[in-house]
Image 1: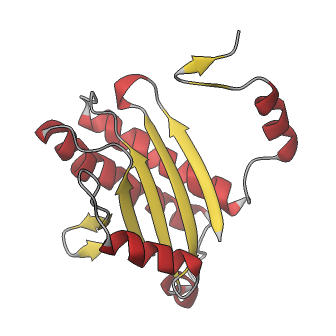
Image 2: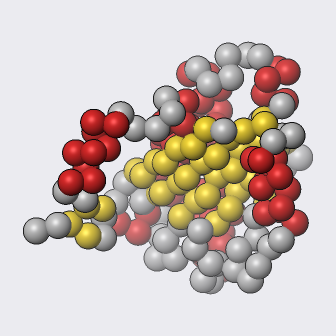
Image 3: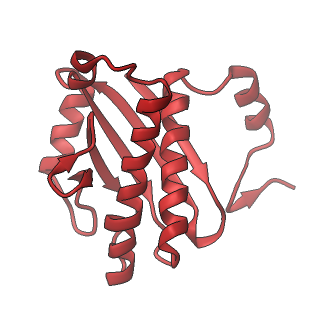
Length: 166
């Protein structure tokens, strides 16, 4: 199992993704199928597509972390953010992750949890930020997480877009 996190951008169009990559017949596959089969109000996991009838490979489950607030938020989540996830996985294919091994790719599933702010308003920025955040999360997953020294230093003085220590 590989786990990663990516955060790109600022303001309402920023993207925050978490990825879990693993074997179809392992715990990630079980989590993937369970999440797909158990939607809840405002959160309906779905198979991400690059285009209609062309799913992302490996099969990717898109899980929205923010409940759909209104029609525009839904359009940005299911449109620009989903396309950004597809493009980010595509970048990972081209860069290094799967190295053209079809059997290996077909044995995997990917879960991508995606934050789209209900106040987001720019579909091109939402797309680009989700593409880059998905790619960054997959890079981190490939590398088995952040460097321990870097993580320990960051944990000594934590901050994020919503909070900074003083």
